[in-house]
Length: 113
Length: 117
Picture: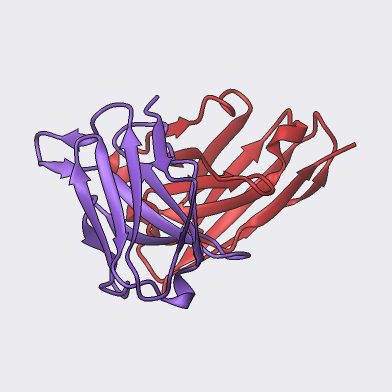
């Protein structure tokens, strides 16, 4: 199984500042035949289901604000929120869908400093 | 508008069974891969399993933690996906979500499953 490890486990950032969450996979999730990284990012607010933010490691889902961006390739990935807003307080998860089981990272709790 | 609605959750004793259902609308269900993901109280997300669309082979995969106890199936004529859960234990207590796609692009609101004596 591919193990997904996020860092940090929790993060406090001031409003308007940048937030960066890292995700590392135990093996590459880059599929060489199509050069796509099978990696998604999700946001989950309390009492709500998760919401897809980013897929293919860097493609923003429709309707997601452009302050959210994804980067990385192979085994190392980053979710960046360029200017933190109050509504971004949530837990963020990465997930690989390269091979089953489609494993999630443990989550990163993002708070306002 | 895409909608997914799960049902069938509840309280069950250890060793018991439940069947969860998820009905989809607002998209071409028969072409969609469907996932089940669960979240234990205060914990992170755990992928339970996935069923591909019939045009893509209909392959079913389950997480090791549920293999042999849980089974995913689908009825495209009803826009439904199911999760049959047998031999339930307390570690299966969670909110169970269905989600569409290879990556989980749409999620239902979830249904609570509690396994307790």
